[in-house]
Length: 466
Image 1: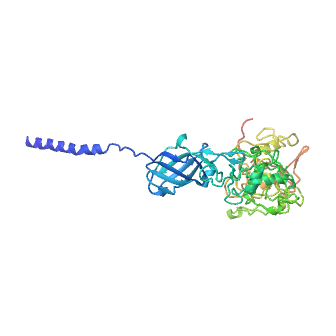
Image 2: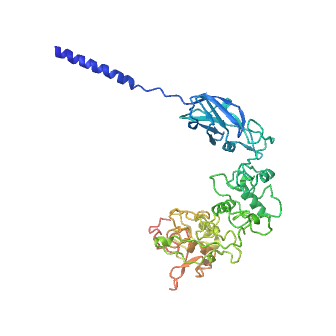
Image 3: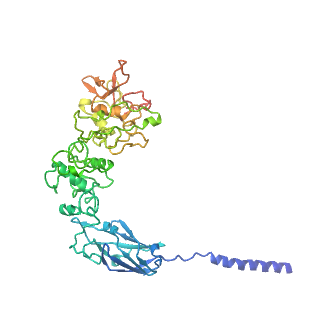
């Protein structure tokens, strides 16, 4: 009996020991994050002093971050100058100016939401606690100071947004000195300004209306992420946006000494106002990468191969912005660097060729359009579109062991001197399958692995039913 009583007491004691442990395992109440309760003043200029009052801020200044948020979701960040658990004091930084709405090329007063990060995030302020922020120097709120009647000149230097136009010039022509791309068409204001001047041979003031490359007209570019502009003002086959991208990858070259001359060369390294942006500058020969991998370098003469027009001047379409061995036009969206170009080329009545794999092939060959697998289009501002480290000129889009130079240049002129492949009354661009052996040249297509060689390593052995 005694043993039974002792056992029961032991079990009861063990149970009592467990109870506090169970109680301690109950979920703890989460600590609340910071809270904004007051903002002063409710109208403030960039550069002015803003005071935020609330709860649960960090006394250590650097452990607090204030977030400004515009209606379209863009944000800017600031650190307070002074901090306590209930108050943050900060100078509204210049970066907040980028969040302000732009109206008539001026930064307009804009209501911005606030949020504090102090270990945790506060909620964004409602409208009653979201201050209206005005531009630096507007005189329209504490921190404005300089007067100026609402004109916002971002004046950290003579060209605040670094778009090749001085702040004063931008105010004169209506662009925003605070924004490098006022009309948000992917091209900077200065580039569009000088392209428009080039189109008018630089002899007249900047044309502020359409139709020109215009820094206040988003229709001559394209919204971010959508694609290329379809406009080519100077008629060289390169779209406005392609020429702008080429200018950017060639280090945004700008020669101010050319800005006022009456010749056809541009102050810009690439301009959509003249097809002779750098007519007197001979393109540099590409530096082939294939030999590093044991692949033969293309055996063509550069820069002579670039000369599509046969004259001394170098036009923008003949130059090679990405230095991959292919002239700009050959890789442009309107040129033969896309599969779609070849489909249209061989669909012409004057060059009619049945698409692969029609049973009735053209002259016994299969060089028409090919859609059995996708191919990467070339890009005049990207020297290696497929990322295999070979330059696009020495590469081979359809993997038939004829490099892009061999196939693509044939549509511009008879690069290999074989006279082309003649079938009936039509002579097609071609390469000679067996030079010197008396074998006919065979027509080519840089995006068809069965042309020129229907026995190439990537031409399909099994053709689908028609």
